[in-house]
Image (tube, rainbow, N blue to C red; front, side, top):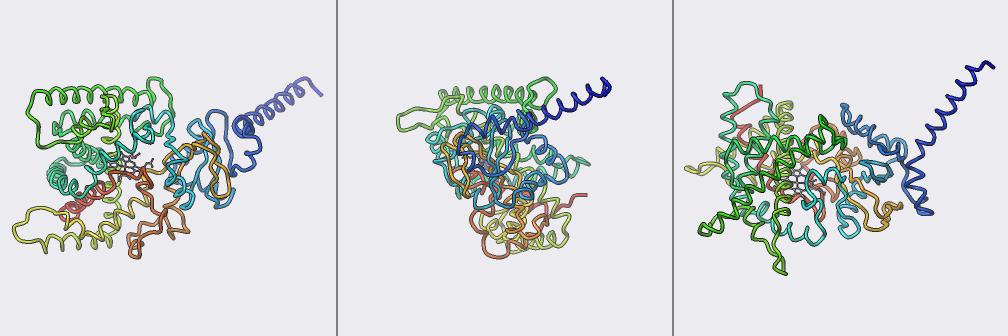
Length: 458
Ligand code: HEM
């Protein structure tokens, strides 16, 4: 054998050994240390050191078939709805079918929020995703009613309507517009008014830009180097914190000198909030809660509104049916009544199906994260204490056993009785169910009402 052949054989053997070692590294490091418990882990694979399964995850979400990542597990291991993986730098159990997702979301004792550290750093340690069990309950009670309650919806309806009508009129004279960008501006304007009573366009545009930078990085690799999305997002968060601190300080100063206001917004409610021991929220806590609410309260609505508008445009029959319903609402309106009422909104039954179908097909919050407080048995397998749980809401909505022909946009699939518990989770479930779900549907409906009556995209 020639020397070069020996060297080449050595290199090939070396590469194979290193490949094998790297491929098993996460398995040895995270799985073997579980002792006998490891035999009760669900099937799956732990991917490569540090990056785990993230390369195939990103590849799928950048392709035209984002569901290929999770469906590859079902193909390899069967539709068992629980798989092990290594994602966002943590050993993770992925739950993917209605039964397992529901079990995790409804168990707030054995599961706490488990968002990747990088997401928590962007949204805030003191925001909802970082709050302890008791703090979370208190802040929910304080903020969910004033957003989603019947009285709140009736109060906000007028402002949402006025802003939508004005914005649509402005767009018609702007020529070609980037639809999502402008929808984001619209939805941000609305949430800024509700939380901070701010109508200043310049301020709203500046803050919305920072949110766009944050949202671009929520699912990006956490590389804090200039030029990378995560680095830009951290800088954007700092700017947001500074701007909100200035607003909050000004509000506190105003409240000392000015007479008490009859009209209070959510910032006032957060300043006034007190627990049973008389503790008030610090500025840091209020700012993180605001950062999360302002973000959650505009980004998803903008995306769902955009998709619903596109689906309506693409499906002539659905468009005509939805338009007929809105025409009828206006036609039967009492004389002299200007604008929409909550009663009219409740009559938009077909439009509600269009929105639910959009929420299902798009599944904008495709995954939510938890962490196991203890070893938890699920579907006959174990989720070890400290492991993350990725609750794959999108997979529930794309499950052909629940929704035949799941990729098809078909509002009529909602004609029958309401969906079975755990099969429709666009807003999550359990104690962390989205507190803005009714508000979101109201805002999307108002936009679509005016769009259907007076406009079309060209
Ligand atoms: C189409 C629109 C929306 C969608 C699809 C959506 C989806 C979701 C989902 C899936 C969760 C659950 C997260 C989890 O279980 O960890 C959630 C939580 C949350 N959402 Fe929404 N959301 C929308 C609109 C809104 C609006 C309008 C607001 C505020 C006005 C809002 C505020 C929040 C907050 C504060 C949480 C955290 C709740 C908690 O941890 O207790 N969302 N949202």
